Image (cartoon, rainbow, N blue to C red; front, side, top):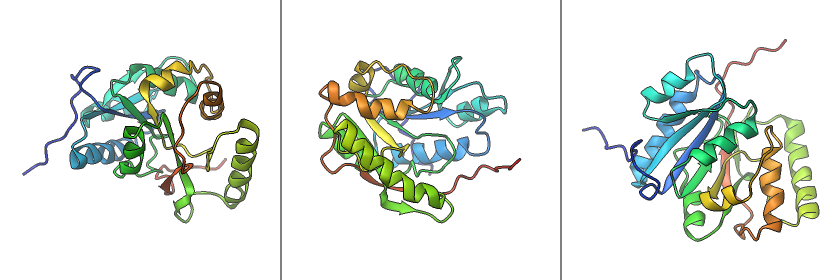
Length: 225
C-alpha cells in the first residue's frame, strides 16, 4: 500500500507547518530525487507541508519534472541565487521554511528532524554545520575544508553571531522572521546577508551553533572547460 504523502498544493497559509524550498536552475538530473526525499520526510514524520521549487529560468524541463513529482513551482524572472530564494520565501505557505542551497542532491532532505525541533522550540534561524556532521569523499574540495572554518570564525568575530558554518546551504527559518529582514541581495551573498542582519533585528539563533549536517557529492555531471 502506497504511503499517503503529507503534501497538498492547495492548502492555505494557516494549514501548512513547513515549506521545503528548492531554488532551481537547470537541475533536471537531480530535481526529482530531491523532491522525492523531501516528500518522504513529510510523509514519514507526518508534517503538513509542501515542496516549493523557485525556478530561475530553467531550459531543461526542470519545472515540468518538479510538477510531476507533486511540487509547487514559482517562476522567478529576476536572475540570481538570492533572487530565487527571496521570491521563494515570499511565496512559501509554511510557518517554517527549510532551504536547500541547490536542487543538486548534495544535502539529504529526508532527514530534517533536527531543524524542525529547533524551529518549533522558537529559534528563528537554524543553520546546518557540515563540520559537526559528515562530509562524504568528493563532496568538498580540500581548499574549502580548510578555508570554510576560517571564514566562519571570522564571521563570528565580525558579526557577533554564533554560527559554526557560515556557508552551509541547508538552513531553516521562521517564515515571518526571515521576511521581516527584508533582504534584497540577488546573488550568492544572500546567505551572508541573512547571517549578518539578524544581529540588528533581535533574531534568535540556536545556542548549539548549527545542526549536524551531512554533505554528499552532487550527482550532476560537471564538464570542465
